[in-house]
Amino acid sequence: MASARPRPYLQFKFVVDLGEKHGPHAGFREFSHVEKITGLNKATDVTMKRGVISSSTLEDWLNQIRKSPKRAQRTVRVALKDDRHRIVRTWTLLGARIIKHVSPPLNAKGTDVAIDELVLQCERIEVSSPAEPQHDGRSIDTCEG
Image (cartoon, rainbow, N blue to C red; front, side, top):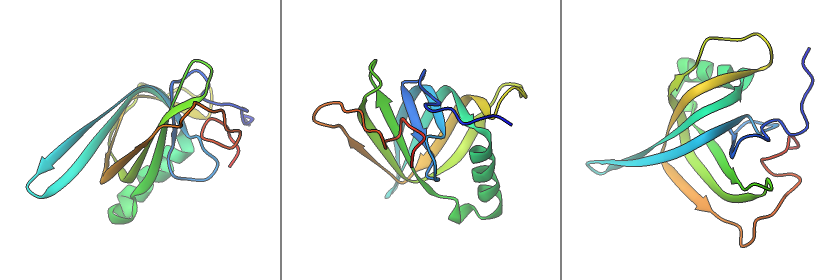
């Protein structure tokens, strides 16, 4: 059985909490978002590339989407960290759900799954930046809740 790592996604600039307990759940090297306006409705697609994600968290969310798509929306938090691992900006994705994921071949060496691309659609994005970058022991960059 694999043991929990104290700071699991340390090598990634973007650390992601997928709206479940005991995050973070993923780390990615790239993050971008595009806002689409069609008629009066507005949706935002968020793309994260080249990362790893907790296999159980991803599988649970995909199963939830398959069984009850309307209830599968989550509040997802993406934090950008600087070179000293301090959070410098946070994006909160409200009403988010997975619309696409691309993975390389599976590897049975750990509990995380490599992800080439993960695309989420969300209803709204809230962006925040601390006045000064801070290291918060209970924030998204640790395993503590």
